[in-house]
Structure formats: structure tokens, C-alpha cells
Image (cartoon, rainbow, N blue to C red; front, side, top):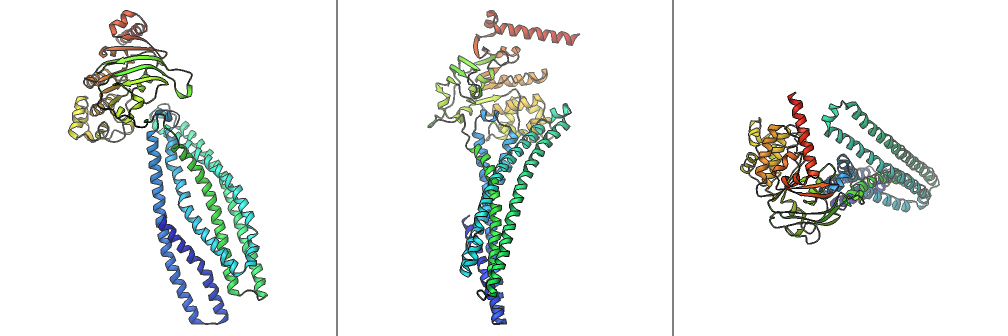
Length: 568
């Protein structure tokens, strides 16, 4: 930016010299008629314009470099900050809208910070220099022109405020359109299954049309502003010509001085026009930057405390001590209340209960995706709010019910569990997860592209890749969200076999949607309306004849009915 500014100052300064040379040239022609003097001045002008062009190139290149670095730095800084925000932030936002801020908003800010800043410096120097030289040539004429300045300033403020408001609204509408498109394209199977292509196109068109109407309102103000400033500028030139012509006729001004004054007047008018363009674009950039800085100013709900403890290798002893939890947007409605639960190292605990009982919430407290409203979650004697969250999550493996893969190759998805794993370790993990066989049958093997979110693989294949990914991570604590509930019998058997290997010697917490799977658990914790109401193994809970027994019998009866229907 320093190099660009120096080049800009030199180029603008050389531009100010041109009207003075032009004045000398015209006066020489009219007064002396010297051809040699004309040749020297012309040659000097050509050399001067060449040197100015070199500095303009340096300025343009350096400003482009600065602009692109601003885009890169601002996007990476914003994206890094977004990665560190807590899950609560993403439950209140749409991904498409966030992507819009990373793309279009940053581009608008780039223009405001580089091209417009350079224009402000260049035109500012040109304006001040031209004004000073006009005062030197004829101060009466200059004062006459300056009477128009208050009118220009007032109009710039009025138009600029309107444009800033329009810019923010336009960026909001663009973000809304991006979010609509992202949702529809991400769920394209559902769109096609319900034949809602026309509906989604109309929904996107409506958002784009609203954006267009707001943009046109801004265009009306911007165009009116430009036209008004252009009128004022050329009216000023007409007055310079009228007043200066009278001075020449009266003998108070030479023809060369009049031409120089006209050129300086044109320069000042151009500078004023550039100022208006800069001001309107700066207001638009202000609206876009506000949306970016809203993201950068967002404070993560879950953050490391000062001097957070780095967890040593865990044994996997988990304690819930008087844990209560309510989501921030419903603080009076507790999802969990007074949970007291101890899970021993290497134990397999199943969480059971009706929908909305708090199973997933309790599950999410262990890796500290959320903090309890009161009470403590203690792992190996450490309150997890006092430990470094990355050393905590680095020792916890998660296999969700709906497996999410990235749109790269199978090998890349597996290596996500351990970025430094060798190919041999990756393939060994795949064999342990019963995934190696189907991977080797694919045309490209481990280099097969899985598509967005793994759409090219079946549900069972995705789950086995997810299990292999968890095996590579080698966690001490394992969280399973009933990874077999949506699979066919053959896939379920393969996945369950892989899970059995994965759970060996690890503390495991399972959300059990199907009670037929809880036989692998050492103990079962039964939740209802946020309360822990029953705790024990299968036989103990059946003998208790409480909620667990009722749920188990209900599912057993439903399974018998389904089997009977299939037989009939």
C-alpha cells in the first residue's frame, strides 16, 4: 500500500503540472511564434506522460495486490472465526446466508478499501492541487466557483445516507437468496421426490426479484446523484468560461491562463464526480462490512478459559453432578434437571427414553458442545469447562445416526479421523470396520469420490466409513447415536460387528432408539422429561416394571405385528 501510495502521489503531482505547461505552450505560440520552443515543450510533455504511465502501472498493480490480500485475509479470518463459534450459533443461522457474507460481502468491502481509497487519495491530491493553482492564477474566479461547495457537500450527505441503507438491505436479500438456493440444492432428492422443482424456482425467483427491486431503488438515487453532480460540474465550467472570457477581453488574463483555468476547472469537476462515486460506494461497503463484522464480533458460547488445562490421555471416567440444562432461547424450560450419573472407565451405557426426554442433550454435554446451565460434567476428575476443549474432543469419538461425509475420496474421509495416518493404517481401520471389502470392489477403490455428503454410498457403507474414521482417531470415549437404526438386516449385522470391535476397552455412551440393541450395554439410563428416572441393566429394569419395561414391551409387540404382517 505504501508503494502504491507513493506511485499515486507522483502520478497525481505530474498530472497537476500539465495545465501549467499547456499555459506556457499556448502563450508561447501566441506571443513568440517559436517553433523550437513548441518542439521542446511537446517533447517534454511526451516524456512526462510516459513517466506518469509507469507510475500509474505501479499504482494499479500494487493496489490490485493489496485488494486481493484483503479479500484472502478477511475471508480466512472470518472463516476461522466461524469455525470456532459454538453449535448454538449455527442453530440460529442458515449456511447459505453465511456463505453469502464470505463471498459477496467481502468483495464489496474490497472495492471500498482499495480502489475507492486510491481514488480518494488521487482525486484529493488533484482537487487540492488544482484549487491551489487556480487561486494562484486567478483568485477571484476561484472564489466564485467555491460558492457551489456547500451545495455539493449537502447533497452528498443526503444521497449517501440513503444509499447506505439500500446497500445493507440488498446484501441481506442476496444472502437470503443464496440461503434458499443452498437449501434446495442440498436437499435436491427431497425436491425431486415431491416434484417441487417449480416451487423452488419460484421461491428463488421471488427472492431475486425482491433484491432487484431494492437494487433499482438504490440505482435511482445513485443515478440522480451522478446526474446532479455532473450538472453542477459542467455549469461551473460554463461559469469559468464566461467569467474568464470577460477577464481575457478586459486584458486581465492571458489566453493560456484561461485554458489552464479551464483544464483545472475540468479536473476539479472530475474530482468532485469521483468523490461522489467514492462516497456512494463507501456507503455501500459500509453496509456490507457491518454484516461481516457482526460475524467477527460474535463471541463463542463455548470457549477455553484462561490457562485451560491440557487433558492427559483419558481413562474415560465420566460424572454428571447435579446437571441442569436449558437452551439459551428458552432459559425457563429445562431440558435436563438434576442429573446425577457416574459412568465407569470402559463401561457401555445406553441412554433410553421417549422423544424429547433429553437423550441427545445429555449426549452433547460430554464433548462440551454445550455447557450445563448448572452443575458439572466431570471427566477423569476435571470439570470439562476448565480444560482445553480441543484436547477434550480430541479424545472423544462420535458416530452419528446420520453419517456426514465430505465430498472427497473415501481415503480422504477416512484420514479425517487422523490426518497423519499412513495408507496402511487407513486400510487396517477399514478392515476393522468391515468396510475394506466393499471399498476394494469399487472401480477406484479408496480413491472413489463419495459425492456431496457421501450420496454415492449406501447407508450401511457410509456408517462403516464413519466407524473406520472413528477407529483411526482411537478415542478413549465413544459416543454412538444408534448407528444401526436405519439399516437393513445385512448392513446392520456388519455395522454392529464393527461397533463391537470399536467399543472394546472404551467408555461408550449409546443413544438407543431401538431397545433390542441395549443388550450390549452394561447399564441403561432411562430419561423422561429431562429427569433420570431409572438406572440399571436390562433384567433389573424389566423387574422394576417401569417406563423401560413398558417401552420394551411396546416395541416388542410392534416388532411381532410387523413380522406377522410380513408372513401373511
